[in-house]
Image 1 (spheres, helix red, strand yellow):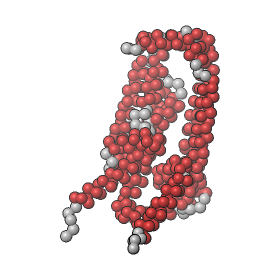
Image 2 (cartoon, rainbow, N blue to C red):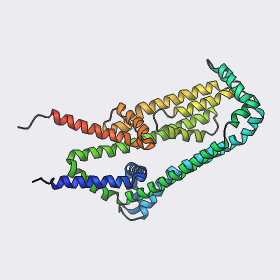
Image 3 (cartoon, rainbow, N blue to C red):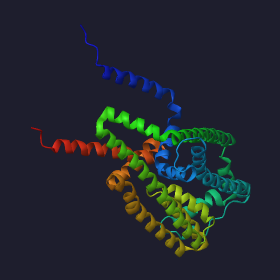
Image 4 (cartoon, one colour):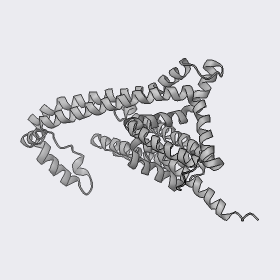
Length: 354
């Protein structure tokens, strides 16, 4: 007679099957759910303080989690909306300048010819393709109207999709704030039942890694954007606040801030600001080196004793595999793997029981 599987194994099989079906149904909403989870884990200490100030420590209800969810949403939406408005105005100025460029051409800036090595070749290409009115009109004429319409339609679709994702992220975040304590207790009970105390420790390491990664990426990025924004203003770049905000966003990616301050240095060259450009690149390199090699690894790796190499690989590998969400999940996943490895090594090295 064929033996039936034990009740625990049967329960695990049925649970896994329904979990797979649930994941299939919710697949399009997984990014919003993961973003909400990352934000809830990262901001939970702040939310706990907010509850103590607003409700005197009494968690629950609707008003407090709703207010904090809207506050978190505003922190992300207001800077992004401001950047979009400024970039839109700059794009409008460029669009209005295109007919003039097509009619009269765009003269070669004097400083391009003085660039070492490739300056002569760049100046020649510029004169042949942009300096001559006929060549400039032909080059701009290659921008087919249909291509622009398709690009605009794609951009609108992506904006609508991201807006919907943001709405569901904030909605999920509200429920996580409202029921987070109860969900944490339920999750801990399930992990203890499935994996024992070691599984609980791994989950704690993952939570600490997510929280430390958010602190290491966001706070360090904001600090880099603030310091380099001041440097942009000192050297006389236009829109230093906008450049500082873009620097802060790109600085969340290791070595990403260099893309902004190098472009800023190139913008100084037509004005004869070679010394200012060199100073700006030097300040940016020093700030980025300290942030990427000392501050960020200390904040992220120090929380879960994750070596700098694994912090860097977790951030860059997560970014490549999962996009922006991978910036925060990559180090958390590697932290869990390192914790499991250490436990395995400790168990293998322990003397056998008599």
